[in-house]
Image 1 (cartoon, rainbow, N blue to C red):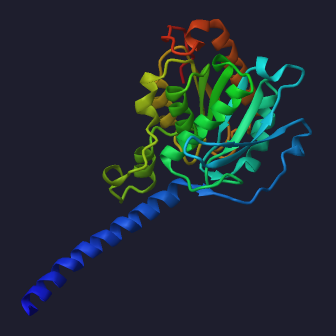
Image 2 (cartoon, rainbow, N blue to C red; image 1 turned 180 degrees about the vertical axis):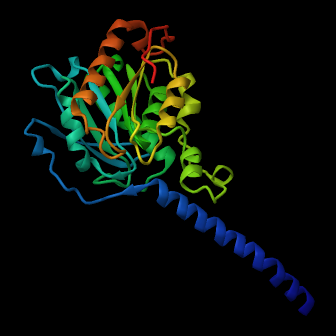
Image 3 (spheres, one colour; image 1 turned 90 degrees about the vertical axis):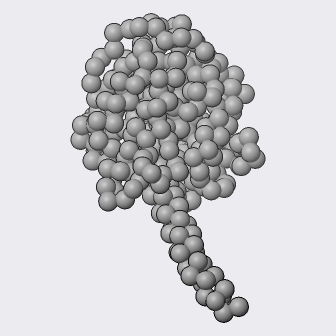
Length: 295
């Protein structure tokens, strides 16, 4: 029995060590991708606009929370609405300035928290964030918004969520603001000494999905982005089908409103692109050629 026990110990040490490394890597990966905050630092009333608390459920039963800001002077269901998928840190209370800029375009805004963020229950995951965006889309549909009026807006990691949303649900357009090509790509840049591309389980592979997107696409990015390099935006734009538009922003990764007028102008120009390509904006339609602005 002693030789067998010694052999078992010799086998158990590398197996348990490998398991421990695997668990540590998964923990590290998850905590690098998701930085949720439960504490709400605002009430939603700070913008001085009417708004509605939205409480809804994902398809897998997770309770979610968001804020809906109707457009000024228009029937909510008849207006264009920006479905705001935010980035990987904080929660919806940290996006009020962006919501305010969006509302200046005349569109409605629905900003929601993924599971594990703010008042939304659960724990974040890649598939979970996709289901959460689908639930937010369903909430808007229940409010009377037509698919062609729902524009999926994604900030940073939210761009990957928004990209998946337009593949799963009918939408009128896709907006990628400060969005990376994929988690393995950005991870390899941030941690070049780690085999990120081989080990990554969380993908958010926007660049690979964009060729299948059949609605107008707007890419917004700053050359001064100190986290997600400008090359990510160029690659995403190249992968997208026309009609598409590129809007170059100012400021670093966390300050897309450094030039507020440019941010708002980019959105308005995109709305015009959608209006001039009604077939491309219709759910399930094939993309049509247009003359996009190159980055």
